[in-house]
Length: 497
Image (cartoon, rainbow, N blue to C red; front, top):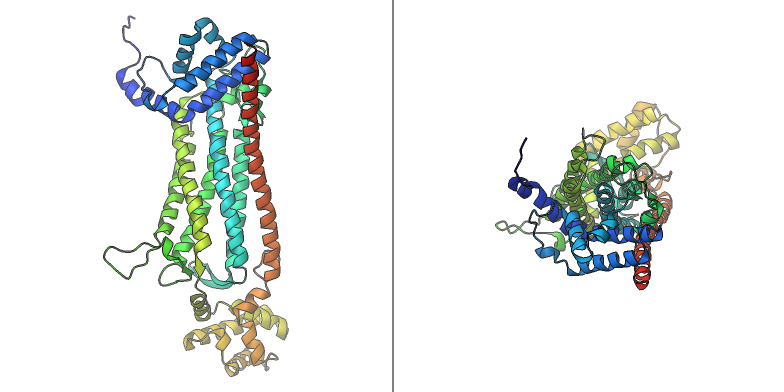
């Protein structure tokens, strides 16, 4: 067959090659440059390149990096992709014989997944820093609110009193588990594919461990086929991110309900309130809606990446490469905005304690503890005291009074109806066991809202937050140290020429 067509097809160029080239130059160029430098250093150290050869290549790579005007670099179709563009520039400077030696023992396959991972590492540690800050703010706010009573809901209805701190403690625990899940996903990202070459490594005496060290990875990813075919470093990390965004979205939805006019348990200060263009009375806590949207969008970005891997072959493929990698970065961008906004928001809002107290009274939310206390104080089964309490709740709601204001004579009558004797507790005791303060104070079991129990929880949250933050800092320091090691070796090799 005679084929006189010339690569690339114009439409293929416009719809695929040019966008991929733009993604590479905008996002991955610095990582590509570091991989080139590190690979050259490793080849010199392994004796595959002489120091003079390595020095010439390193100087030329530095010249290319200094002279490249990435903003104005236009894809022309003369080369297939950014890799070949840089290689072409290197050949122009030092000739094909020496420039071609840089690619010894490697492939675009292992280069691509390495630079994708390096970018994900940078994005992840930045996001984890934002998450650490949010957790710190939540711990501080929970400590300040450890005695501030709120009304907890189940199935959209008033349930039981707890504290603002205790409620936030649930979110703190969830986010700390999210931190652990993201860190676990990051462990696979933190393994270097360099040296896998196309699929099966190479016959050249390269040093995969050294490449991993020079690029800031924990070590090499073991199986060379898996280095270029397994994409669980993508699906694992984005799955963990998605879970976090879902968790935060649920919390934000509570804030929307709590700040509504009808509930009004949460006061949102003016700095987070927008007005209506036509209704002068409106106080719209619009940032809550934006946070809910950011959580949903971020979750959707994660889905895009995870679903793109569905039913793809277990081999090297474009489905897991530049285009989908770039799309996934949107999850980090919107996710960071969400974490930063929620951090400031949660540190500024206040609980409307008057409304909370009113609704606790109206809903008889302390009735569970009243039944519990009667069982303990009167030596009765919970089943019987539950029936007494249920009758009291019906009577209180009908009379539109709180349990704390319940008529003692009516209580005695209801008690006697079920137990066939008078109660032993006094009117003062009845008022006490019906109060939200008593309800919370006796719930001193592990994880409960009572002050002694919750302060123990806060200590644990704080200790874990410090450890997670230190782990993130250590990760960043390792990557920075690798950059310094690479820079030092480059300078050392250049000095030999």
